[in-house]
Image 1 (tube, rainbow, N blue to C red):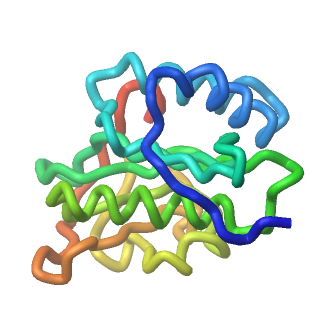
Image 2 (cartoon, rainbow, N blue to C red):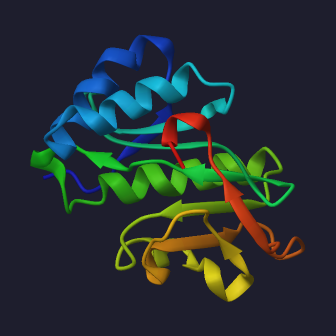
Amino acid sequence: MNTTWITRAETGADRHAVHELVRAAFGRPAEADLVDALRDDPAWLDGLSLLATDAHGTPVGHALLTRAHIGEVPALCLGPVAVLPGHQRTGAGSAAVRAALRAAGARGEHHVVVLGHPGYYPRFGFTRASAHGIRLTVDVPDEALMALALDPAHPLPAGTVRYAAPFGI
């Protein structure tokens, strides 16, 4: 199995493939519908939806960042990371996440939050958001909300996270 992934930004031509990839990865339509809704939301940032592709150019992993805020400070939110079932645990998801974080840093973005599995995201540098005074308006397990400063010169701000409307938070 391939463990070296080619990463690239998602294009409009990838929309259907990404929808099917996300749906297959999660086994239900909710996450795929969320990704579709984010494309139509002002929080969508072109160039921050990244794919990991196989040697044939077929998308097998997907990660996206959308606009969010921590208090009044602009930040990004990492959406659902999806990997086709046959490629899970091969590094395709990690490749897509790393590519998205690199793209965000290259654009001058400073902060990223994620609501996700605490065993997965620390490998990218995410830490518990509560340690920085970052919170949500809804109750979630403390270890599930994580944050990352992409640039050490811009430490994480404290405040309540405001997500894009499609997230429903």
